[in-house]
Length: 362
View 1: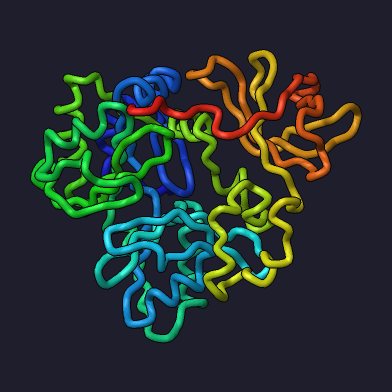
View 2: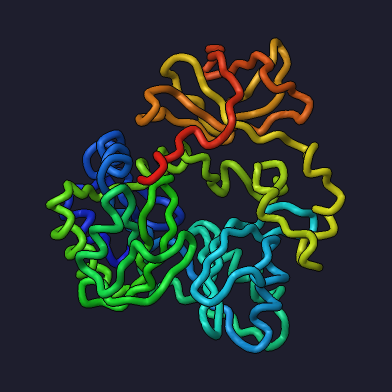
């Protein structure tokens, strides 16, 4: 039986279409994916992300352990800051992509729901002596408020001016009477906040956000819109765009690798890769027609298979099909490509990521 987040009852009451995802019953959509997607782009959407995992690292060697686990450099982040990072194995493959929060005396690592058990085991087997590793996932709920009206909405319910929180920073504040970690992060390409609270108060916070959001046409949003939004923004999805068989340079995440910081798991293997010519070339694709390319569809240059689609969707913002792909590094920029979509060749053009960038000042 699939697990349920603290907000399962709210999803059922709202008529959500539920699906099993990463071992949880999660809302795929409440109305239509298109309407939920455009609500986030134009106004504000509310997501339940309580299936994500949270792991706390504490103790005198916690920072050294985090530095060993991730390829990025957490020493650059002060208390109240957050950092996107990848954890690699000895061969340089990606164990998971994570967000690391630095608190005054500990760290919180947010992991993908499907990777929670393996990540926890990985961390416990690789941290330094003196680091305590605690899985706090079951007692933590996560709600994301995303879109142009997200900051103002939370400010109406909060003791803090959320607009003053820099990107990838957080603070603790009262939101609708509940203590929350208020983080200026998200996975949609829009401005917004992620609110971490105790699992037992999550339903009350959801209700308060829905009630206050009625004035700005807030929509609860499911995993369907979360995926279309993140792909437009060029954000990666673990298990599709990357996994243990993919190094960070080969999925366009070389910027998260800080080889100069010293030793970390996978550093030796990553030092042997030429960042300008990695084993695979990760690119955006603009796809002709309305057919949707899916993960695993082959990409051809003429009659030769040169790679595969990693993610694909129909972009409701751009009104066209888009995809990302992992290609041979020898494929020339601008080379004519096609995608085999159920036996039909759809023309595709390489484009830079992201497909969508929110307007300046938004």
